[in-house]
Length: 454
Image (tube, rainbow, N blue to C red; front, side):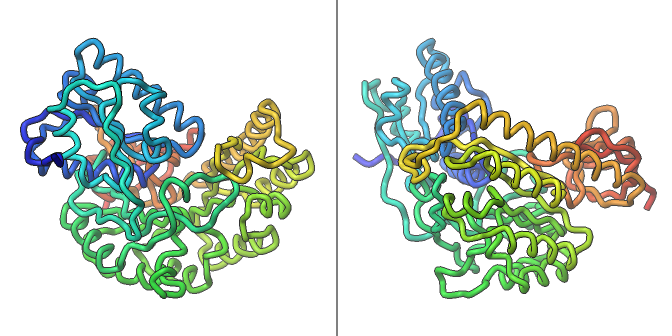
């Protein structure tokens, strides 16, 4: 008998969301579906009929974090504080039934393709008897992107992620994403615009476009360099004041895209382009098409077109074959490029990836040392850039107001969760409001700002 979502009505369901913004969108959609089915949804991890854990699992630390949360939930279940435990998301998709052997006691394992059946699966788990083996719902990887309308937003309701595609065709040698989320598929423009309008109607002031590879949007639909046209359509929607772009593959950033970002007022001058490395040999080993000369030229083009542009990137150190000279080149590039923000990760050998089979693996201590060197160099740059903003007049989107009247917000150069913030001293701001501020001080990655009278 197939599970029936109507049977979920009245169940108290706890929810834990782990991982990246793409995973957050899936969590928000599942929360919306659970709410529509009549569940009482809570953030509590105990005292619930069913606890749903939406996992990340594309690198080892994410897998370890997810397993720790799952095992904690299973202990609570064993003590009678949780009824059933349902595990969804990337780790479920990646491991399938094997996840039940890693963490015994899971009641259901839900893959990405079964996301929209979560209410029925929760109902089935709640009514079922205790079994040694979890129910496994993996399904098939879809040839299209699931619709994300009807979400229950997590966190600030004035800022929301808008997924424009799913999967990736890049096949980088270190990455598990294609094996987890499948081949690249663009969400249809009409669906993206409809979702954006729904979010705007619900009070969203900042739309953050996300994908595994945003610059490839439309390619599988026969639309060449489609992102600029999509931005124009989103720009015309009333309500949102900021549209932020994340995950731009560097070779996909065309002159047309740069011009569009520079010219449309709602598209913030914030470019997030994960470069991963700069040495041509390491880039080839990573199976990436970008090269140092073109990347240097791209950075200069961006800064010429938008002198106020904020550049963010991510790097990986310790890929097999990375010697002292390749790392020194990367460090020198970081000091030259002077990114506003950066994340640097050590390479993890992930089962099933091409890089895991390469010779000349780098030892853990060397990888950790190189990561620290990169981040210390970037820290000096970021702190210096923050100090140079003292005295500037900025517009801030307020995220949180504290009981003492102070507030926390962000200017256009700060994406939620990953960048620094603006600490607003005084004023009468409220969440979701844009306020004018002057930068008074800097404190490490954050800016301390004072409201200015309108």
